[in-house]
Image (cartoon, rainbow, N blue to C red; front, top):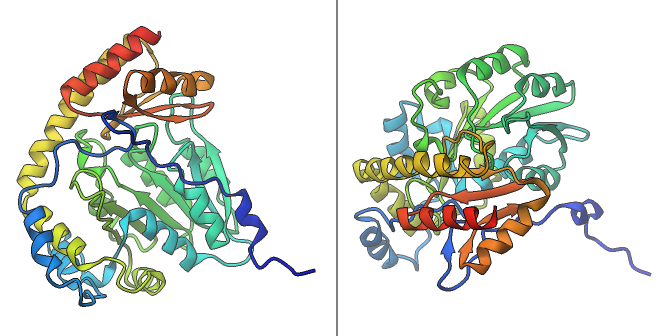
Length: 350
């Protein structure tokens, strides 16, 4: 009898569930922007395609230098990877040790428990508050001697609310510097509340601050997988050591640089999304009063045990949303006519 070489604990990991896609359906399940690539991006990809027989720059030097200049941080503090989700996994791999733990809110980004288990960390999940926010005090209380990192998703995917400056200040004041405070800002560009902090600007000088961002959302590069992380140099270096060589390919780096050059257009498109976000959330609250505030490009319907039922109702109408069984439904803010369709579906179902 042979012994299976596969780790037994991996069988308990929930599979990452991507947003559903069906031909001709309105896809409001994956938090994509609906406007296509930014100007210059497709051309940059086409130009870079002529060199795909060559290995790309493993250091992603041009992109890191551009981000360094824009963010006002040294390039050695920046790590890049195939989306912020991959970098989160690499960070957890870099800090894991036997018996170590990571604290995060739940429900939050579904990749956290996957990345933690693969890295060998124990997940300490802290329930959200009744209004679908991080329970920051409970998260602080959950930090113990085995905690290596505490992750705050702001805005929180899938529920929408952001962590305030006062809350983040309390986290940094309460946890020891040996615990990394990880701020996942994948949706930062959609935040238009001036009272909510920019993680890099406010906490970039903290030795235990780590901030993640991505080009997949507001920058419109979901299909190319480019993200980055800002941390102190030794943490960034450790993550770069864990990243698969040549993870960010040549066309992806070229696309990210072209997208950055089109920032004004990105901001214009984000303004369209946030304007629609306000309208559709107000409409949804007329039917489901406890829809929480959102600072992202999606909103949360806290439907509990009826979440899967509502998703099936939408799919029957040709609309795809993202249900989380027993908790709620995440709906991407789309074009005005798409948002009208989801509101109509919600009215009919209710």
